[in-house]
Structures are given as structure tokens and as C-alpha cells.
Length: 387
Image (cartoon, rainbow, N blue to C red; front, side):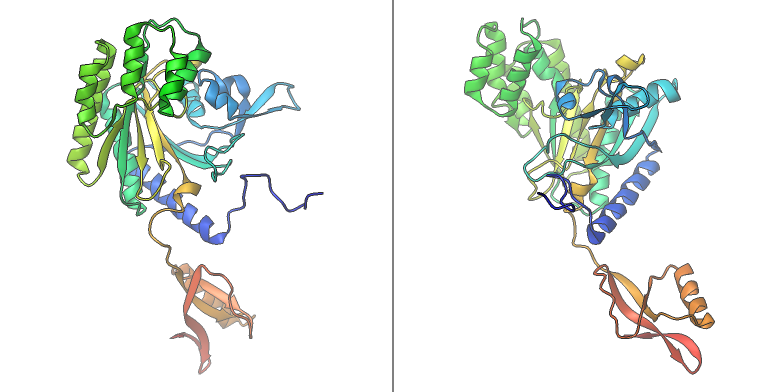
């Protein structure tokens, strides 16, 4: 019999030190997004499954918890990603003719962890631009992501670029069902040449040769020139490579300290990406700290098939990166009903000070605060003095 206090696997409480760090990250990143002109939205944690998953693909469906609504009898889903909900808000509730910049922060739930030690309850923060199909919007969300990571002290950034159109261009006209194409994409992501050869058996020779070449198309900017030479001649592929070169050139101008790489076989993540994609890695971190890209088809099921691009990150994962946290300076004061004492404590808090009230003989156990001063009675007055 399991203990009542045990939580499900990959689900955990967030304790004070990490919770404070997460909250500081949330405030910093949302304030930065607001400085770019993004507006905050708060979608619900659950909604009808057909709305939550329409047009998102198989991967998100497998990550979504399902339950039955006791009021309507319909199936509900607990969101595994917030982007489809924001697309619904843009399409139906805002319905603006021009550009919408929307940001959000809230928990999502995954049926399985995305990595061996990952949580199944990420705290997802993201920013999205709707209504602009130009590369300027792609560049803006990449800059916001990079600025955000710098603002919270994450160093050694690497921007990894890819484009969903490249694999689609290689596979254009290939007669294969969705399950087989999914297997091909999985083999590409895993860089598994044997599996790729097996799943692509019977494909036209240009497509098979293009898939084989994709396995080696990762590295620095020279990858783009190699891709132009070895991939099938396709207008879709050419535009994708040109767009990646433009984005890399403009990011490098603003962020010369950020390394830029390419992996043209990378289709990891959700199935709804339609164009340029990116991931940001940090020093000594194996998993991407930010993922994003263009997903112009995400609003089609809601009746507004308009351009969309954005990114998201997990604040819980991000909280373990960046500079070591410093404790907050605080003032120690005694408990007591003395009116003058209570007034002094209140005034200090109104001035932005942290005041911990401690009983005689007790010491504050909170590891988030460093009591460097105390409020003491001196000559009938409550005064501050150093500890």
C-alpha cells in the first residue's frame, strides 16, 4: 500500500526557494514581453478535446490527458500545449484584422515526461505573433527569446535553426501514409540511417537520396550551401534555405556572442510547425531551454488560417539554470502586541523591506532570507540596528 503523501511519477511539489526563482523568472519574462508589445492571455487548463487537439497532430494527442465532463458528457482534455488555445483566442475571441502579439504563462500536463528526468507538469511560458507572414515576425520572437534568456542570466546560448519545409520538399509527391511518414521523421530526428533506409524503401530515388543527405546536414552555416548542392531542386526547399540564411544573418548582427547552428533534419516537437523552427540551448544543458517556430496552419480549424509564429519554454526547467540565487536581505523583529512595534514593522514593510517576526529563543528557518538587521527597543523607541 502506497503512502498517502506520495505523488505520481514525474510530478513534484515546488518548494520555497525554487518557487521564488520561478516567480522571479515569470515576472521578468512577462514584463519583457510586454515591452515588446505582447498582451497577456489566460486560457483555461481544460476544454473540449476536439477544440484542444484540432489540427495539432498525433504527438500532441498522445501527450494529452483525457477525461469525461460530468456536466455535458463530452470528452475534455487537459492541455499539453497552450498554442492551440491561443490560436483559438486569436481566431474567435479577438478576431482582429491586424497583427496580434499574445503571451501566456500557465501549467500544462503531459501523459509522459519529455525526457528521463523531466516533469509531467511544466509551467509553460510563451509568446506568439498572429497575422504577419514575413520573416520580421520570426526574427522578433527569436530576439524576444534570446533577450529573455539573457535577462535571467542564462549564458552560453546556442541558436539551432531548422525548417519544416525542407523535409516536406524532399518528400513532396512521395506516396506514403501518415504512419510511414511519421516513422521517417522519427528516423531523421534520431539520425538512424538503418531505420531511415528501411522506412523509405520503395520511395522514388531522388527522395531517398535527399533523406540520406539530410542525416549529415547539421553544423555551422556551411550546411546551407551543402544543402543547396545536394538536396532536390525545389522552390520550397530553396525558399526555406534562403529564409534560414536571412534569420541567421540578422540574429548574428544583434547577438554576436550567440552561436548559431543548423540541423536540417530536425522535426522534433509538435507536428503543427510549417516553416522556420528554432531551439535555444544553454551551456552545459543537454535539452533545449526554448523551442519555437512558424505554424501558419494552426488557426485553420478555427476558421482563420493566418500566419502565426512563436516560442515557449518551461519555467520549472529554466529555474535550474542561470546564476546562483542570492538570499534576500531581511530584518528580524520580535513578535508582540505592542502598538509601537506593530507600527514600526508595518512601516518597514510599506517601504519594501522584508521583516520576519521571531519569538524569543527561536531562529527563522527560512533559507530564502538573510537577516542582516534587527528591530530592537532602545530607550523606549523601536530602532534598526545591524546584527
